Amino acid sequence: MAFAVYLQLSNNYRVSSYPVRSVCTLLVVLVMLFVATPAWPDFDERYSLTVGGSLTEFDTKLRINSRDESIDNEIDFEDVLGFDSEVRLGWINGKWRIADRHRLSVSYIPIRRTTELTTANDFDVGGNIIKAGAFVGSSVNTHVFDIEYIYSFFKRPDIEIGFTAGIYWMNSLAELTASGEIVFEGEDAPEFRSDYEANQRLIAPLPLIGFTAGYEFNPQWTATATARYLDVTISDIDGRILNLNLSTEYYFTKHVGAGVALALFDVSVRHNGVVFYNTLTYEYSGLQAYLAFKY
Image (cartoon, rainbow, N blue to C red; front, side, top):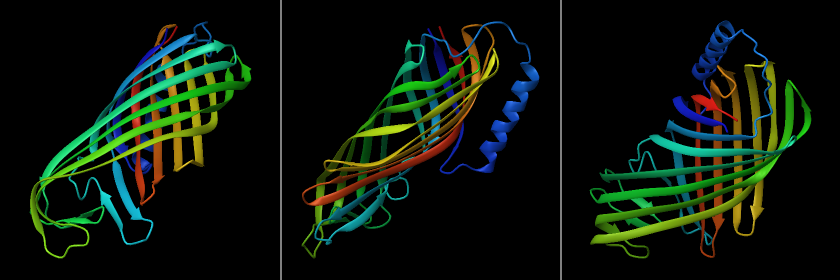
């Protein structure tokens, strides 16, 4: 069995020179410290389990457009609604090597964010204007299931290169409550409401394909690079996902190790409703460190 615990060390919306320098420094440290070469092979683990946590910096936006073009507004969750840009995340991942060249990976990531504030400016929610000075409470609950099949079309003791195909399933619910003056769509004068509510749910099962490659520098030290992408339309859902990951691991024993990773994730999903187009986008990148256990 394999088990890993992740720790997000730094994040940014874009890959900057700081995390890149950090990864290079850590790689040099690993090379200097871990030069021993015991005789156990890699790329043969039967099971693995990853449980992680991170402090991730988000950039999240929801755009609402009406088909008749009478409404076109974007809500920045961090700037307008006051959501913290740094979010603590936890996740779980399990892998099963079904056969020598076949693997199955399943990940679950719950994301819960809440905020309350008194608005400093007017802002538009689906054609209704919430006036400055209103008290607003907001929450976004997202459940992500990432199911992936990996086929290694090239495999030898020190190299494994594979094709990946899977489903990235995102179920997100955004809710907003407000107490204050609101100008409702089609009206000119504001009306005081203490119980205004609005919500938007987005369910997006999106296919995702890519490639992954692993290299064994020695039986203790490995590196893996993964790139996944897809831009697709399924029924009334338009989705684009980009996921890049570069990691290196060192195993102290046959089953226990440590590693670092540089990750980039960018998601944009649009739901084409009867009246509205709703587009949710978020992105983050960051440096991760983790402990790894495998069997």
